Image (tube, rainbow, N blue to C red):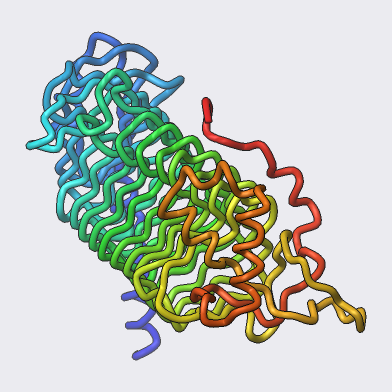
Length: 425
């Protein structure tokens, strides 16, 4: 009797599941038809397929459904408000051209605005163009933003543009394989945790990525180039930044400011004004990075200490390290870094220099304070001053010191990254 009852209950559940699936309908909308009315009439779970054409509308999606473009239709917000506003969970937007939001920074006008509660939203394979903010995502968890092209209002000054993708107070977002340009910041991440940013191309903006107050995020296999700054990590902790490429940015490739307990590894930082800008950073691991052909390889200041810096290659930078501090900072204690301007020797052939590498001396400090002095760096008087500083410890200045400089770089293809500077520099 008990087995029979269980079978009957299972059959009833299966029947109910089939009935629920049958409620979902696919609705087709053609040019000239009212897309907003179709969304209002749709039932939760419906699929609305939008045929190729131009639809002038400001949409509110307040129920779970899929809005799918067929042959890439264009949805224009008429330069007012949000072009698409989503307030319900489990909404999918794909294959659409979304454009022409309003331009109110106060109201945060966006091509697509995911409002609080729009959890598990998916925005896939869309073009978001000529919007103030491309995507604004606020208190919406577990969103997936992938394979979109996002551009802003190019003629606006940088401060008057919105960001490409703005995350605020979110959890577990996945931002994957997007191409974002001509916005204020391509990705702006604020109070958002446990996110994954992978495979994105972020360029021609103020910052490629701007992190603030966000923890436990992964930033992997992204390209940031031709921005003012590539990646800015500010007041964050527990980040993993690996296998990325930051090149040709007019200021810094990767900024680490007020950062703790993070891993920055196997990145390529090339052709920037400053490769790394490190300020008030503690307890991080900086490992296996290629820092090549920057004006300054690493700008280090503000008590950045107790960090592990191992296995990096510093090649072809005009200044390897610009360090201002009250005491030596020891890098490469375990296995060393490669410094292309190292002038020591390796008599026992073990691949490690016999004398420590020191990044800066008294002459370097003077040239930072008095830039015009660089005109005299090759003069006998300045060379004599450098030699005196080496021979008399009382004149020595604190420096980054690597006790085990490696003679050969890890990155054998480093020359491929030369010459990738910001246009006009």
